[in-house]
Length: 485
Image (cartoon, rainbow, N blue to C red; front, side, top):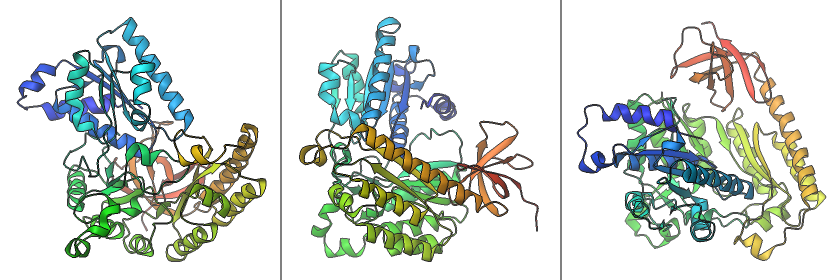
């Protein structure tokens, strides 16, 4: 996704009346173009990159042929994602050769860390390779690339590296924003590259998180989404990797802040500020977190809770840290405490040694939970993961595809069932923008993360409005603004 128009508008507004530094004056005519792929963390990181480059005087362009800097923020979670990025890099380079030979092409994010040497030296697709923890080094790396050098920094930190940076908000609606609270992951799922590309878990100072949320509220934002590879493992005890908490002083441990406590602190900023979070790991979600969601009306009643498989055997091979029974017990606790809570999932089908019985176990778990939404994928072996080193990718592509289609079909049925239950009811909706399909309609989301389309009438973007649901598809609610009373 390109960020150009929104970024240009925000930077132009910020520059009005601003005295430019010598560095900014030097680079004032230079242009940047950024695309992001993958998880929400990547899109959030692109906002940080834009902020760092803006301070150096770079401004955005929607015309890639005029860009001095072209960056793609990458994902390595699946082979398909990497192939998409590689094609984009080839496209950038064709433009560079034909129309703008001075263009600098760079790779950000997870793929940068994993394929740094190949992208730079073997395929010669990029001039800059920079990992998720090294974006502060961008000004120096850009200078090196301008001087004809190959610029690389994929250093992984044990500290939160961007807590004091005020990101340039790129989603354009001025209503919702991402706020990163953790980086990295310690879970070491056998199929996943994230611990290798983003490093160990470390949490951000809660004071800086709260300050960022307060500032967003002052700027008119009405919803924040707290981001991390595993938000439930958030733990602040003064800094450092989570694994080192055991070595912390008694004072540090007593004053530490966990995820449930952070959620409450943010919810208490203002009842008008909605709070969402993603992503959770079932083994780390506590009853304390569930109680915090239940207690505060402005913490959205929606939990993304990846399961990956309904088979305890496969979950063990994946090193997920829980079995089928433990996952379902967590689901039961959520539904008991928050009956109306919407739940979504990730499922990977066709993992190593998955039998038809394992597949049926996944389908039966889906029937038990009846997820509201889902993100479903075929297993894609990733280089240097534990699964690639110790297991065999022994499920045929044909079988993977067949199982995936069955999972998608079942989820579509469940999504439609859950949407139909909402017909005739009224929900508070945060108005986020104009519908892409009709200029006479707004769209927004309920606390359950369900998208609602309704006629504009006399409401504005950024307002809360009660909407009566009249109809639905499996993905969208259709309604009208409810009459008072």
